[in-house]
Image 1 (cartoon, rainbow, N blue to C red):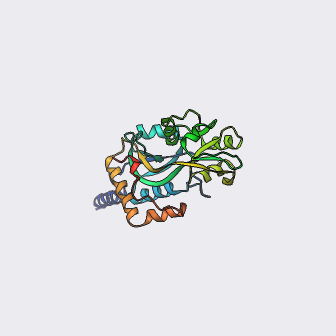
Image 2: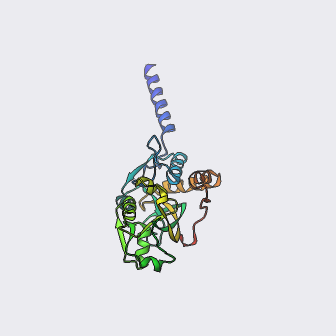
Image 3: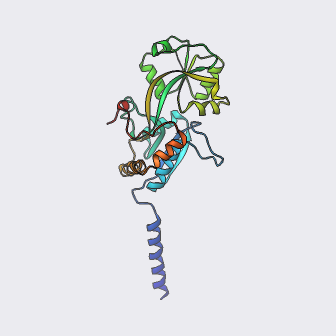
Length: 261
């Protein structure tokens, strides 16, 4: 009798474990986020459109996952070579199209030249920007790559945007390349008020995506894509977006130049 009870107990435990465990194809996913790209709440959780959307997708897909802060250069490399890895946020460009599997767009932003507010400097075109002494860019960033492709030779690449803020305010560079939604956080991280800079010229509008490694489990990727369509359909995506970008509408379809497959 005891033997029968033990066997029954064993089958019960196996059943409970199988019911509670994630599906066999729910592979673990490592999500890299650029260091100091996002502000944190009092609990240390990353805040912003991307972290919130990612956490919602983790919940809906039941994916064993976590968001890990890492340098952009290292994250950009790992997200191309590691299995079941993703990178946020990533601009989708023709140059990067075949390097990743794409999910989005999650966010739409404007690429802008910023200047020191008290500085008298008139920029009305890319040609005007080519004539300034120095422009601060972020190493291996899509904006830097774009300007290099446009023939810019006056770029000063930095390992973090905070360095560019300091150089701009110290008059060591004339312009800083950032975005309409990112400049406030960058200035705050650098210990300065966003009112110390102002927009000089908007030169491009782009979409940001979750960039998955090409070695990501296709079943996992399909599940995430379906979950993203679900949060767009039921209004969750719009609700998250407007919490952090109240003046903008969420990008429900890609821009024409987004380089879609």
